[in-house]
Length: 538
Image (cartoon, rainbow, N blue to C red):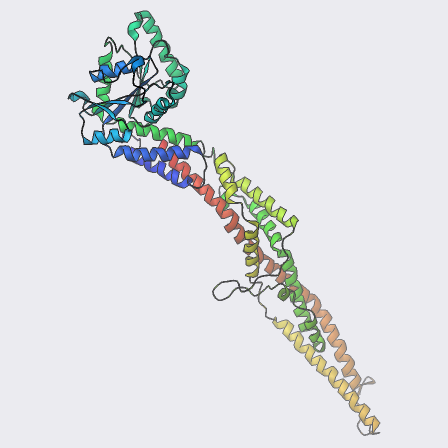
């Protein structure tokens, strides 16, 4: 490691992590480039530290003449008689088995072994086809090898050194590869000294404007040998450093990571806490919409009616309680209130009506609002992934909501003590009224047999005791029922509110699991992706 610059292995690990996180989430072409680079890096690192230098240039730039001058013999035929197979030539200094495997990987079959030269031992020099060749396969071969070699030497000539074809297609995209790029102005022997200086100055300014200020620029003549020593010295320095392959991979990783960084958020989300960046208001809106779609208001009303029905029956006149069977329990009709079994599984499904168009539209709006908040600051690619992730199936969501409602404990079914006490009093008053009835019947029977004078009839304030028992029992029971009714209603409303809170909590769990948690996962993956990209491009 030099200074605080991460080593290549750390960069590759970070790039690999970014690719793994984005795999299956992002659909961007930069990921394919990253995968290609990772495959290239793995293969290149296994092929030793030889330095692969490629001479690239246009037709007539003198590239092949320069290649032959460096090789010490006519390996590549210059001019119009050049081979037209589109295959690169190679001259190798200090060849061994590893170098052969390297050239096999580069798919360069034409090889020339150079005599031993310690300063250049480990150099593999390639002569590429012309990048502006009329043959498509030649241009494709140049593009392929430009991506694989360690050092690129672009050979320009005084006539076409500013050609947009080479600058726009090759040099500008390599602006981040200054350490592995070299520009050579060949054929300076065709210019007088003043013209050569003017040409070099103009080319230097052009490279600087294109972001290539750190790219070395050499002037030479392959035909006369002028400046050739300076080029050989530069190549010897790169070969002896044994870092060309690493430097090229580092530059490639930086370039790919920079491209991947275009898909990172420009700033923090508006609501960074929990729920995938969704704020409290949006979460409540989502839960409210899902609760409406799940029929929570219907269930709450059913709870209130059920509790009111049972309470009224308990505190009402006992002799008419059988009429309760004529009115089925609202909760039983909806198959609600059973809760879950011992294993936690829902033991029944509800009979709630399906959500209407208005409820479904409300859910759609709430999900969209939450998604927009969660996607604030994200790039378009991640926003697309967020949309794909939270496209919850309407059928699946309805099923989960129904299970949540069916499995919610709506509260204890026990009858409160005060209602049982009132019910006991009602039975007592009923027995009092019944005693009055029986007493009156007994008097009727005694009167029939003219025995009514035998048994004295007690009176209270002139009212016969049997009549007082009958009327008093009935009136007291009615009054007790009327007094208990508001209390029953109050309990029913309280039970309904508690049931509503539990139902909303169950629906909120569904909202979290089916909508908000996937959003949070996307945001977390985005953050991991961007952190990895940042480490790779340092």
